[in-house]
Image 1 (tube, rainbow, N blue to C red):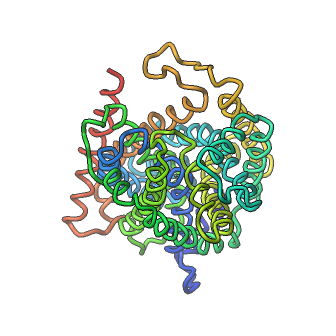
Image 2 (tube, rainbow, N blue to C red; image 1 turned 135 degrees about the horizontal axis):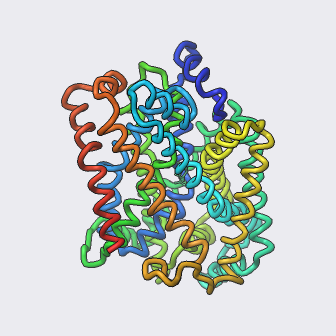
Length: 468
Ligand code: PHE
């Protein structure tokens, strides 16, 4: 299978027809979709926003968002992709033609292109942090260090724009190479080994965290809701993160859905991907917070949280240099497969709309993201006081990096998802939806009514509360 648009339609047909044993297209879909979903969002972002938003109550709202907003929208996106059978914009065009709807719906794909471009610019900077930690860890620099020393390594990295730039450049180059060539079966096979590897390593980390003596504290922090700590903006962050972590609202799942053969259950595939994604995030939380509490660190330390806690644990555990290096390699890999899915829509768009070939469109798209990434790098050091939209109360004190994260995860992705829910729930033919999903009547109605009534209302209410 290839991530390239040109291969999408034929890929779906071939996948449906060929019987390549264990490399079924169902597995290919699950791997690609999980590769996109599991990334920095799970391991880097989830723990730190949970820490910033007070723990349990935030986690509960996040889990509810996954169930009532995330899974229904993922099914809707996959359904659009499979029914349309093309790249997102063309799938949407097909569907609007078939169901005689307003052609303007194809602009939902455009929101995705814009969001992917903005996200990748800062995602690549964080991917760069992970890359640099592979080297730091392999050199044994975390071994036997104190919390202060580990914190010093991290702040040293952030204060050095040139080093950040080199790692950002390397990460972006890795993403561009794969996107330019179309994803080879090699990478797909690698995903099937490295993803379980990441899972096992996280389990080892959780096992280590259990011995820290503060595991119980971490479990209650994560799972005992204290609603006095939850703010309305925390609810928006939880909702936005449900979109970010499942790669929704950006048409990625539409692109991948077009590979799915007709006999595979969209519901089962979507639930599988969502459960794995959520599992990785919760494991990351269980690995990180015991270390935070054992070392008297601040749960709300912000984006540096995992880069300041995990190395400390690796530095103290037996074979920590090996485990630490492996962990950051796997983190890079998880970020890489997500990065690919972030660049792909923009490249497809350039190919389709501007008629450029794949290499040229990848070069242009990647370069533009890379340049915008420099602004995020500078906002970590030289421009750390610059808050471009600081005159608005909701953006007060937000640097360029914070703003890009906030605007994409909390506004663009939920908006894209809202439009998908409205299109599928209110406009597409119900009969067609039933045919695509082939669920029991009860199962179908549960999904349909959630998507039609609950999902859009939930997104709108959270939006309006935060604007007021
Ligand atoms: N889901 C990815 C993560 O959690 C990020 C992502 C968002 C990828 C949107 C694609 C689209 O890291």
